[in-house]
Length: 445
Image (cartoon, rainbow, N blue to C red; front, side, top):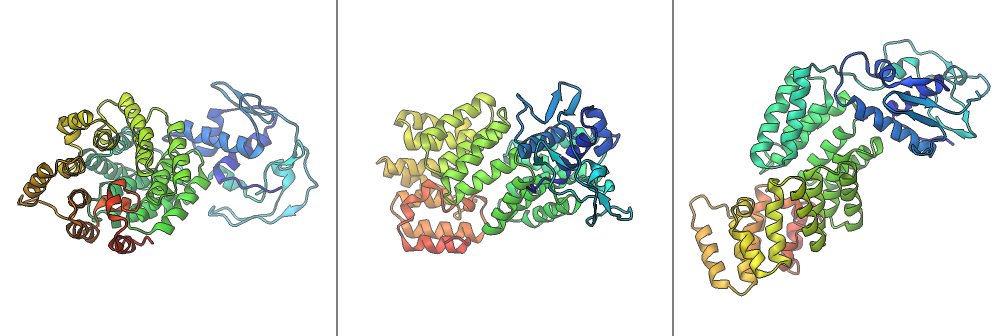
C-alpha cells in the first residue's frame, strides 16, 4: 500500500534500492544528496532518514530485514528487488530547472520489496533525488557560531536569550539561506519576548525558514511556537503536527508541543511529548526542565519535583529549575524546605517576591504577606500587571485586585499569560465568573 515518506528519507531509500546488495557509504550519501561541502548536522540528518525508512518498512536495526548498518561505514539494502512491468508514469512538478520527463518504475527499482510496496510516492525526477532540500554550506566559523547560538538559546533565561539572538543574527548575516538559523532565531525571539514586542519578527523568521525549506520540522515548530505566544491556538496545533509529520524524532518539536498541550490541559498528550523529548535528548537540561514544567502545569507535583532535581543533576546551574523548585517546595514540601528555598539566592533570583507573599498568606502568615504586598505595590518600578501579583492578591482574599492584575497582564501581553488556563497558582480565581472572561481575552473558552 502507498505510504508517506518525506523527500529526504525517500531519496536515501531510493539510493539504497538502486544499489541493492552493495555497501553505500555515508560519504557517498553525503556527496550524492547533500553535496561535497560541510553541512551542519549531516550525521543527525542521515540518522533521521534511516530511522524514518526503518519505520515505514517495520525494520529493526538490531535484527534488520531490509537495511543493514555497517558500523562507521554506511548501509546496505539486503533483499532482492523485483521490478514491476515497465510502464511510463508522469513526473510530478519539481522546483528543479531540469525539463520534466516521464520515468518508469524499473529505472529506479521501485518495486515489491519482500511483498511490500516500500515506496508509495514513486513518481519523482532524478533531479529531485539529487537535491531533496536546500543545501547550505557553512564555513567553520559560521558553523561554530550557529552551535553557540543554539547553546545560549537552550539556557532559556533573559541574558542568554539576548546573546542567542545576537549570534543568530550574525549567522544569518553570513548565511542568509540557512533555514535552521531562521527557525532557531524565531523560537528564541518568541521565548525572549516579554510583552509581545518580538513576536512579529519571530513570525517573520519562521516564515522565512519555511520559504527556504517547507519540509524543515524546526521551521514549522518555530511558527507553532510563535502562534502559541500570539494566542492563535488552533494554528499553533496544526503547525506542531506538521513539524512532527516531517520529523518524529525532533526533540524541540516534542518539547514545545508538550508544553503547549500542558497549557491547554491535555495532560496525557502533553506528558507523552514531554517524555519523548527527554528520550531523544536525555542529556538536555532544557528538555528535562520542560518536562518538569509539563508535570507542574498538569498538577503532577511529585513528578515535577523529581524531574527538576534530575535537571539540576544534569546541569547544576540551570536557572529555570530553581524558580520552579521554590514553587514546588511551597506547594508540597515542608515549611522548612519552602522557607529555605525562598531565602536561598539561587532560588529567589528566579521568581517574583510575590510568589513568597502568596505562600505566606496560604500558610496563615497573612500580616507578613500583606507587608510584602504593600512594599511591592509602593515601589516606583512596581509592575502591577503580573500573574504573581495577581496570585498574591488572591491568596490574601483581594479578588478584585487579583483580576485587575490579571487583566493588566493580558493588556501588556505578558509572556507567562500563555499559561493562564493551566497555572495551578490561579486555582483560587477559577470559580469566579471573571476568570472565564480572562480566558476569552486570550482566545480560550
